[in-house]
Image (cartoon, rainbow, N blue to C red):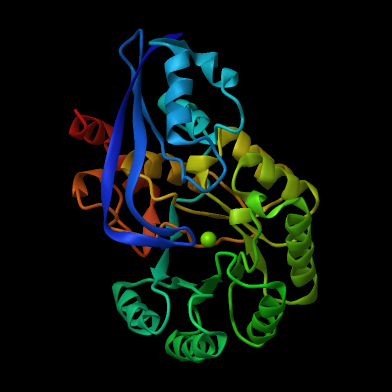
Length: 342
Ligand code: MG
């Protein structure tokens, strides 16, 4: 069937800038696209690349969409290169392709705690709101200072709560060993991306870091989750196919066709955590549908505990709540966000 393709660009200031390894991130840029079929059926999708995550850039995405023309067929996605995971994701969502049967009706969401000492007060607040899963950014202060905060945090959390740590690749292999030794004696759900080398550091260094990650996973009881390492479907596939024994963090908004993503995870019996790419409600709805259609060996809290994200609340859509229901996800009306961009 033929569809009319339209898209609108957005540039949305975050309510507070997001601290990343690449400096402060102040505004989210992306595209919302709309496909209308000959029978008047309409679907929406979102292209929301994260500039340093190795997918296509936003200008590249626009060029790909311009190349498709104003009328596209259902098979148009196959013509888009796999590296363009954001465009492939958006087109599949707008074509209303079914990611797969819904497995879960209700999933816990991990509350994102701020770096450093403020994490303790933030955790208390989140607990009061009903959260049972927490993620704390580490690798920001000196290790000794963070270890004090870590024990303070663990002392406050009830036994049924889960705490995961995210180093965003900040540690050297040696520092990571010291952290894994600490975590071994503590109830930590997993440690996310202890070390990382990006392509600019060269293939030798990347291999060294990959070996360090495999070594940490083999030597310590606390699971390790890969996030930056598995950005892009090709990276995810290669780690899964070499038998990665830990967790993988998956941002569906960057990972292309949702059905292919779920099939890849299932074929490798992957232990996956689904995470936001700080997209608007359009992308978030579609990404969450993927998460709800996933059946893993472990039920893990969603990494969608961020927000409200944008100064303009119309783009938010699905607020971060302690437990998210699929019905709440389905209730989001993407048309509202599309119209807000006219
Ligand atoms: Mg992460």
